[in-house]
Length: 280
Image 1 (tube, rainbow, N blue to C red):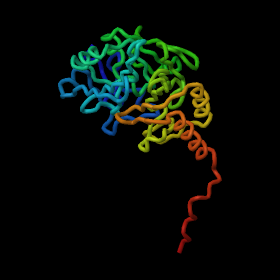
Image 2 (cartoon, rainbow, N blue to C red; image 1 turned 30 degrees about the vertical axis):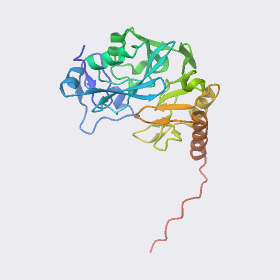
Image 3 (cartoon, rainbow, N blue to C red; image 1 turned 90 degrees about the horizontal axis):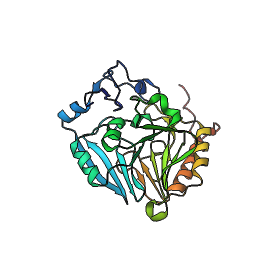
Image 4 (cartoon, rainbow, N blue to C red; image 1 turned 120 degrees about the horizontal axis):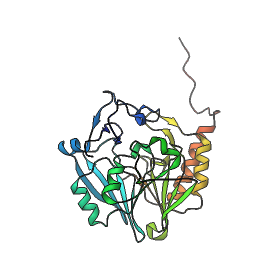
C-alpha cells in the first residue's frame, strides 16, 4: 500500500484518494500555504528520505526521518522487559528502519498521542504485527481505519506492565500521554508528544489547543490533566521532537508550568504593561 495518499503538511496517510485533509482543515492545524498537497511512501523513498535513529535516554531510542517530514516530530522506541512500545509515529517507513528497529527488539505495541502524529501508523502496525492504541474520543480522526487500531475508553489504560496511557485531553479530547513506571531507574518517565509540549526553555511545558494558530487550551482541561497525572511520579518528560526533554524534576516542572499557565489564563486584571503614549 505504498502509494496511498499522505498529506504533505501533517504527514497522515489516508485509506484512498481524496481532495482534502480533514486534520489540516481543522482549526488546530492548517492547510499548507501552497494548498493541499499529497505524497506517498513510494515518493518519500524516491526523494531521498532516510531513517534517523539515536538514543534519547536510558532505554529510549528516537526514530525519525532525514530530511524531516510533516511537522518534524520523531517517535520513541521505549524498550522494557514487558515489551517494546513505539510511542508516537512518523510517516516514513522503509527497509532500513524496519531492519534497525527489528535489531532493537521490534515493536510489541504502538501508542500515539494525538491525530497530528498518526503518520503511517497502519503500515507500521502491519509490518511489526503490533496493535495501535488510540483513545476512543479521537476515533473520528483516524484516517485509515484498520483492525490493528485498538480504541480504549476512560481515563487510564495499562498497555503493558508499568506502561500506562493517560487521557490528559489537552489539544484533542483523546489526547494521551504515556507513563513508564520503571523509567529513569524507577523514578518514572512521561512521554507527552505535544499534549504537554516541552518548550524551548526545557524546564517547562506548554498547554495549547492549537500550537500553529496559538489558541490556548481551556483552563478546566489543564486542571483535569494535572489531576490525572498526580498519582504518577516521573523524573523525565519526553516531548515530541529531538532533544525536547525535561531531564530532571519532570513532575514538578509540569505542576509549575500548569500553575503559571493558569495564572495568566485566568487573571484578566494584570496591569503590568505600561499605558499607551498620549496622542499628539
